[in-house]
Image 1 (tube, one colour):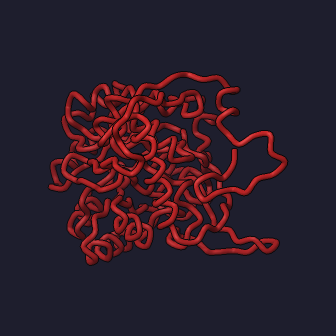
Image 2 (cartoon, rainbow, N blue to C red; image 1 turned 120 degrees about the vertical axis):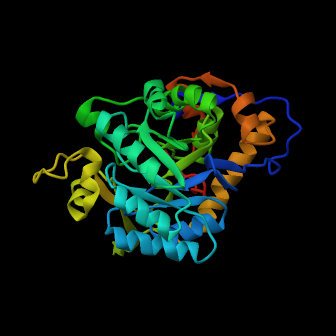
Image 3 (cartoon, rainbow, N blue to C red; image 1 turned 45 degrees about the vertical axis):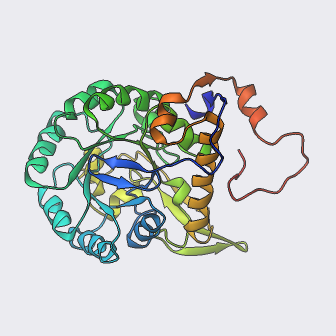
Amino acid sequence: TFDDVLILPQFSDVGSKDGNIKTRVSKNVEIEIPIVSSPMDTVTEEAMAVAIAEEGGIGVIHRNMTAQNEAKQVKNVKAKNLQVIGSVGPFDLERSKMLEEAGADAILIEVAHGSKKDILESANKIKKEIKCDLICGSIATKEGAEIYAEIADGYRVGIGPGSICTMRIITGVGVPQLNAVSEVMSVAKKYGIPVIADGGIRSSGDIAKAIAVGADTVMLGNLLAGFDESPGELVEIDGKKYKSYRGMGSRDAMEKGPVSDRYEQEKIKKKISMGVSGMVAYKGSVKNQLYQLVGGLKASMGLVGAWNIKEMQEKAKLIRITNAGTSEGHPHTLVAFKLEDNYAGR
C-alpha cells in the first residue's frame, strides 16, 4: 500500500518546480497534469469537470443520472473548448453513442470489476461502435489487463482501495493499490496503453508513488470532494460546513440512479452495499487543492531527478518501511499544530 513504501531521494539537477507533468489519460487524449476526477455523484458533474480541465486535468462525468442529462453536461464542458470524459454502464451501448455525439473525448466503462466475460463482450461491441477512446476497467491484475489489450485505449486500475469503498471487507477480494498498478503496468507498457491509478490516494506523495510504479495518471475522489465545484448541498453542523461524499456502491447511490449495475444489482430490490455515505469538510474552491497536489508531485520529481512523467516511472526507486517509518514521516512530539492546505493530519 502507499503507507508501506517511500521513494528514495537521488542526485538531481531538477528543480522543485521544473518537472513536466504532461501525460496521457488514454492513447489519444493528452492532459497537462496527471489528475482525473472520479465519476462519483458527489465529485464530478459539469462544474468539477470544467474546473479540472481549466487547470490541465480532466473530469469524468458520473452516470448516476439520465443519459440525456449526462450528455448535456458533456456538451456544456465541450462548449468551453475543454476536454471531458463520459462514463457508461458496462452494457450501455446507446449511452456511449450519445456521449460521443455530445463531444466526449473518451468513454469510460464504469464498473467495479471489469474482468468478466459478459462485460468484456459488451466492451468489444462498444469499441466497434464509437470512434473516441475507450477506457476499460476496473482491473487489478495482469490477466485483467491482457483480456482488454486489443480494445482498451486506457486502463482504470483499482479494486476496492477507495476511502468510501467497502468491497474488500464485504467480499474479501482486492489487491493493494501499488501492487495492482505495478501488475497492470507490466502489460500496459507492452501495448502502449496508459494507466489510471484509481483510489486510495490521500496526498500528493501518494500521487508520486502511484506514478513511480507505472501510473500515467491518478483518479481522485476523496481529495476532490467537499469543494464548491463538487455536487451536493452545503450543510452547516455546529458552526462547521460540510458536503456529502459517498461511494457509488453505497445504498444511497445505488437507490438514486442506474449505477447499481456497477455491482450487478440492477435487478435486485434489496441492495448489498459495497460502500458508505458520509460528510467531508467544506473546503472552498478546488483550484487551490489542485495547485497543492501538482506542487507536491513536482517537488517529488525534483527529489528523484525526473524531468517528466516517463523519467519518474523509470528512475524512481521504492523502499519498504514499517509502521514506525510511517509515523516518523508525520508531524510528531507537538502538543498541537496548525494543519496546512496540503496536510490534513493522519
